[in-house]
Image (cartoon, rainbow, N blue to C red; front, side, top):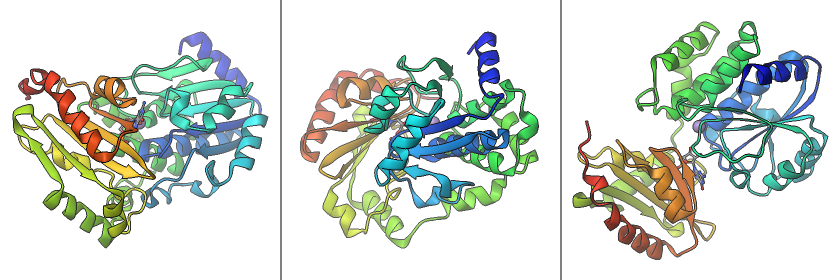
Length: 340
Ligand code: 5GP
Ligand code: MN
């Protein structure tokens, strides 16, 4: 986003507008934190703002300020469609391809509103007039902070915005441990805490929200469902739908499990395959130079970041795993590079 575009957006936001904020399918902490952070900023400027998610998100995110204002498209399509049709501006947060918002993508695609992408995923598609895009940003929340700064509105940072943005930065950086965490990230975090972010309470709300079932599902995965391919530096988990049912699966219960596979010494590439609603959702994580965005785009119809990506498979769970293991062989050299 260049200086002239910043000026144009400033002018656009200088009088009350109908604004819609949309974020990606199965929203995570960064998706909800950035959307509600931007919401809590824009309402102070007297805009009428509607946040729409394609589907629901985990319970540990439902405390975010203004969560009760979010419209879930999968259960309330009508008011969501009306809001998009009436919108002057649509902000697209934490995604960069309309495919990532499922059926909501048709509404956004045909809308005449001015579109603005704020995102940090690789290889953005060209569907918006404005784009605040930086693959080096640790999170979309970091970019929303920058957006507020570019608008000359840092004075409007308050506790609600800060709690939202802190949440997304914390979750997308794995609690400030991934290489995407920079001095700039910590600088922004310091400003958010000064503006009221309840840092310790946020960690508790996000990470201490486990149910007994969720922990037992994790225990089951670790004890029964882990495969380690040592010579390929790879480890993965898989879960069938009946196994999820056995542990009374709720949205968010499998989040983070893939990271346990990546935490094994010598493992550079971790995967997680889960059968849900007859489809296979894949999650990929890596350490070092192995690019899971490219891997997922090439083999699993997905994408994401260099070290964290997701995708889908139309095969059965067993067939998906066979495919995964067979394509891995071609990456043997890359998967044996030295880590730190
Ligand atoms: P997760 O494995 O947690 O679902 O996703 C990891 C990262 O990859 C996130 O940044 C997420 O937005 C992205 N991602 C997940 N699934 C997909 C997908 O199907 N397509 C694309 N393009 N990105 C995905
Ligand atoms: Mn993100």
